[in-house]
Length: 389
Image (cartoon, rainbow, N blue to C red; front, side):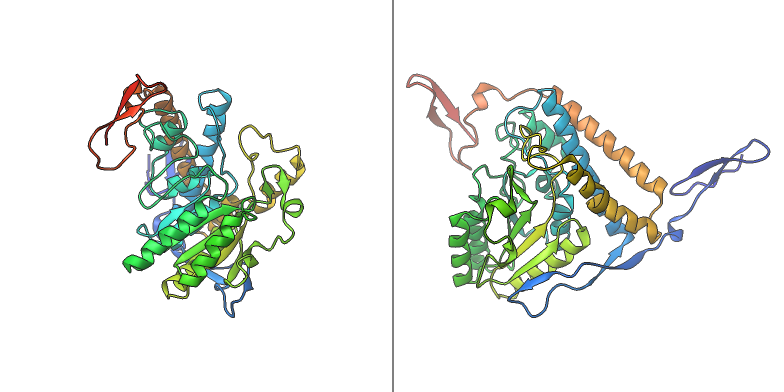
């Protein structure tokens, strides 16, 4: 038996019946490649992001692994919801993975990010484990918010949720950017909202203050074409969301291409760090599920429309095709990654199902940070609960 062990072996049988491993080493793969990316539409800008993006093999594998993990995690959440293990509000992110992964690739862990209630993907890219996310969805002690936040209220390091009120995170993001400016730490805040929130008055109040004070804030509209069950054309008199800042510069980006999102976010981050003030980005993307798990998602759009986006514009397939066509990875290597991700998600789902729920005594804990224990009134005056950090 002759064995040539390297990264992604293919088992073949020789004429003698011996099993031989024929494989390729890391040296056989392209370490770096340059790809053309779609030109961004600009508002009040003379120059925009580049038209080419460099991608290393390590970056490509990392982006693929992260997007595939988010996809598998959301599909598992769908399954757990249908089994009635996850209850309540649940807004899934599958289809939009390039947005979260591209943004995270362009900023630093010390930068700040706040988003809407479609937050599972960003919770993961900001460093929270699949296990902690799924356990939060099932309301267990091991969840990222100890089982008390659920789908819409997850938090991490320099990640401020997960906000349940439409558009409410935008003024909060402007406030975080104000704190960055005040502290002079060269950090920025990425403030995300959807096309459904884009007509909220509080957005324009935040735009105005951010522009007046030149706050280091990237306002990003994830335009997935539908606000709940209403298409953008029916909801907005102007669907050019990147121009909605008016006096604030804007960029319209292909949100299904992780490289487009990365390069545009790098451009926007550099703009903010240079002290030029805020910038607006519109990411054109698409969600495969309905608005939430209570929405089948096919009463206001056709199954054919969804399938066409999946077949022509899927962010994971686009990256995978680039990697294979440029010899940055092999089919077998990507299959191994897929298998490992499936196992990680399955293990996390098992933990999220078996982990105990928080006790009643913990209900009022963590109201304040670093505060001494205090009494909290329950549902009637003689029901006393304790809050501790």
